[in-house]
Image 1 (cartoon, protein in one colour):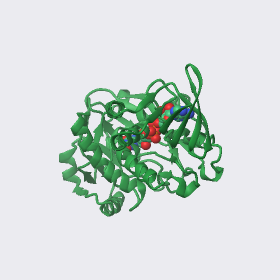
Image 2 (image 1 turned 135 degrees about the horizontal axis):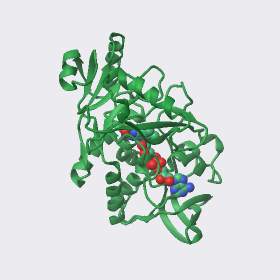
Image 3 (image 1 turned 90 degrees about the vertical axis):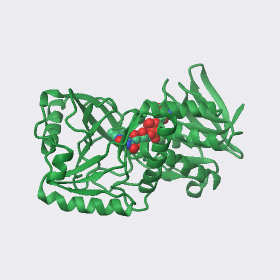
Image 4 (image 1 turned 120 degrees about the horizontal axis):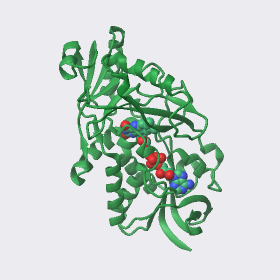
Length: 376
Ligand SMILES: Cc1cc2nc3c(=O)[nH]c(=O)nc-3n(C[C@H](O)[C@H](O)[C@H](O)COP(=O)(O)OP(=O)(O)OC[C@H]3O[C@@H](n4cnc5c(N)ncnc54)[C@H](O)[C@@H]3O)c2cc1C
């Protein structure tokens, strides 16, 4: 049976970043990266806002706060070094009425605890920065940016392959049996079933991570969290962009997202979203039954900060699904990254709940996983 040092399950941005870093720092290791689809990044990693987050909202010292801060810096450096299209365009969080101004103060304070400096702007500063936006006050984040996530993932894969990683698309993980020196793994490939051995198994299957974990024979089920799938819809906005920065409302209390915001892609196209809609099973369909109602909700949310919105230019675009560890209304959970210190299985690393800011944090998550491997 063929044997690998590492088998990484799932080639989204997290699996790719881990493959890149592991192969960079372990030149003689045999590393396999498997992906059930025919292409890398076919799920959450290509269904997001493509924002390089500053790290503003997360609780101090949480993994989300620290890995976002470290990951952001690494990501900008990586993009610069390897010519990945990106732009540090900045983000404006706006208070549309006076009662939201105190929320800006608490967001600024939380950001400060995470080592992020935000600038408080008055109404006329906001007007100068974004003439089409209705704002009583705002917070400006200079280090927020946008990235071409496909190009980023392609670069990670190219570098990883140059460093010796074997990438196997159309390869589905079926199950793993723990043995003394690692795992025997069963895969489904286009040529039928295939078995291999690996010393270390890294589960980066995103929305499917709990299902992968439940097919590892000796893993106690109590370490497998329940996911709460939360779908977000995006509408594209036809024509010339009315803004030059990312525009975010103040998030509502107990919200599961950051509010329906406006992002720009690198071609200057505006999109609005995502909303938050808890669903029972994985389904990327745009909620067509409720499309009229959904559009109405988007229009109401957007018009609060962009009164000149032309509704006829709003078109359904795509959806993404967040792998949430907490149910609707609960405080958001942190990323959950488990090694043998938690579940007692040498060589196994499970990554759960890698929702936003996972794209921004990807390179720092890869470092964190490598530290967990070194500590095993
Ligand atoms: C609506 C939305 C907006 C977001 N916006 C941002 C943002 O602006 N900035 C930011 O930093 N983050 C953002 N995120 C978060 C970010 O997109 C995710 O954290 C990141 O993409 C997660 O990557 P992943 O590799 O864990 O998962 P995925 O990209 O889902 O990759 C997992 C891979 O595993 C594969 N897989 C599953 N099962 C198997 C199997 N049995 N065998 C083999 N392969 C398998 C899947 O096919 C998939 O390719 C957003 C997320 C959502 C949902």
